[in-house]
Amino acid sequence: MKSAAALTILLLSLAKEALAFSSSISSSSLRAAPPALFATTSNDEENGTLSRRDILTQTITFTTAAATLGLAPLTATADDAAKPQATVVVAGATGQTGRRVLERLASRPNTSVIAAVRNTEKASKSLSESSTVVRGAMIQKVPSLDAAGIELKKLDVASDSVESITGVLTGADSLVIAVGFVPGNPLKMNAAAHEVDNVGTCKLIDAAKAAGVKKVVLVSSILTNGRAWGQEKSPGFQITNAFGNVLDEKLVAEKYLKSSGLDYTIVRPGGLKAKPPSGGLVISGEDTLNSGEISRDLVADVCVASLTDGKASNKVLEIIEDEEGGPKVFNGLNM
Image (cartoon, rainbow, N blue to C red):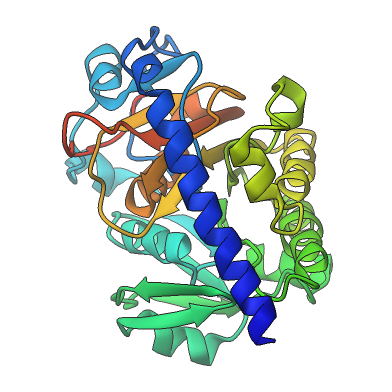
């Protein structure tokens, strides 16, 4: 067991180094960003998915997006108070990205938030505490969360049936899927990734459709479709996919969501960082980023914005942080 954990930790370390290297050699293309991906204007909030690579084409830095697309600050208005109550379910709510999504949703007016978790008792305790936890071979610092007003419901994508999951989602308007297998024993990673990132996610999609959910936001990863655009031999793809073929498994779920008939946004982050953002948000088109990192805070912002921004409808958003220019406040997204 010790040797298995050590091997996984070594792979994680190699992955981080490879992605950092890829990011450094692509920085010049980041600054030569082409125009906005979506030309129309619309309104609402913030957007957010695993951190891994950099840009090749069709990128927008956050500052360019703000000027071109007209970002508005996130403040409650009289119009917000007049909006009907919306119910959002977050699957994978106790994960580092999921709990950040919860935090943002809980502060929104007229929003009922349901945290879908495997164990409601443990989740109630863990969400309210700040701690350092070991998940598989990963050590994570987890901030506390004010869970007041958040309803906890049991949901296990690995063991629950579609019918059972449908019951959890019934009455919800939107679903954020932030589930993902936790790298651990190398001998079991393939099965775990298949069970959670592929089959389990597809069950969530089926259940959302059966329950009448109107919008699904799926947190995935850049390079999921790397084989299709010549990235199969890139360091980012090879090292990331070494963890249970997770990119291939995620791609199956992405395609399943696209063909479901549901309104979707697929958020593909680069390598995920637990620290606050140190650079501006970069939004890129589908199958364009092969390196780069991003704060989970920005991922959560993008996820939440995608729930209500019409220009995120049926789109794939690849996101990383701009390494230059210092941190920038993300006050909403008009894509």
